[in-house]
Length: 245
Image (cartoon, rainbow, N blue to C red; front, side, top):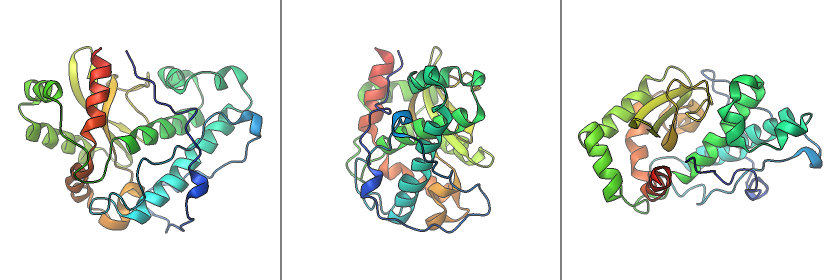
């Protein structure tokens, strides 16, 4: 049973963010431009991060986190609201329902709805180094049975992330056939009916260049190597338990 993220009612955190100007990256599209919508049409809000912008330094620098959250994620939120503003029926649906039938919706809903869901999840899947815990006994046993070991799992996950052409995401999901590693382009995710592998997301990493370029430039593999230091296994464990219940 899919666990619903508290996306629609998350507290508005963008107002507390200090504005940072980002240098445009030629290798990927600019962040979506935030679009003004009427108060009545706004359903989704930008969630606060569960840590400070500089809490992940050593893996992800503070400026990247601030731009990523207050500019890129905020853009997806505002553009999703704009895409839903003229359709009260769609605007009343939970985001997970929109994603499950995304093939019947507009490209704007697919891109921005996916972008909002993916980032809201992503922030919770990270924690300051040393605070994220470790895989639970049950999850580790499943990883060992499926991939051979935790190290082997990380190798396969990194392979999916590094081989994703252009912008996208890598995922660990629970499916009817057990744990699977997959990747998706752009802001697609495994909840979507267009995904090659569909399932309940447990772990995700953003491999759009805006997630790492300031510190790593084109060295995606280096970003992924340090990213494991800030994985929030406590949240992954909770998602795994919920997916299995």
